Image 1 (tube, one colour):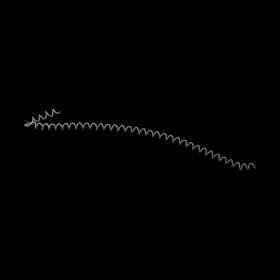
Image 2 (cartoon, helix red, strand yellow):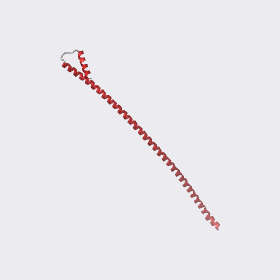
Image 3 (tube, helix red, strand yellow):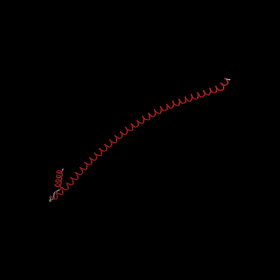
Image 4 (spheres, one colour):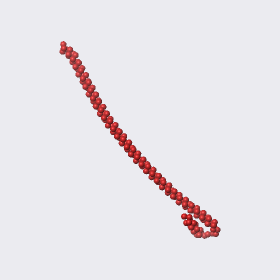
Length: 141
């Protein structure tokens, strides 16, 4: 009778316990494998994040360097243009002064001729007149 009870109760119970033990072992193994994969994924993600941060830092450094270079180039170009414009203004000023001098000398010569003609009521020949104008211009310079 004990054999019969043992066969009908103990064997199914033993099989059930063994199946349960195997399921728990499989679940634990599966959980350990998932935990390991998650850990590897986390490590991989941390490495990628570190690489992305390094790349972003490099891009920022390169951008700053390029901006500094462009700023220096713009400043140098502006200085060159300003110097060029200043030199052009000086040259133009000198040219205008020379033109004004020439115009003033011509006007003075005309006034001197008119004054001399009025002062000298006698008629002068052309060579004497030219000589007087040249002397007057020389004395003005």
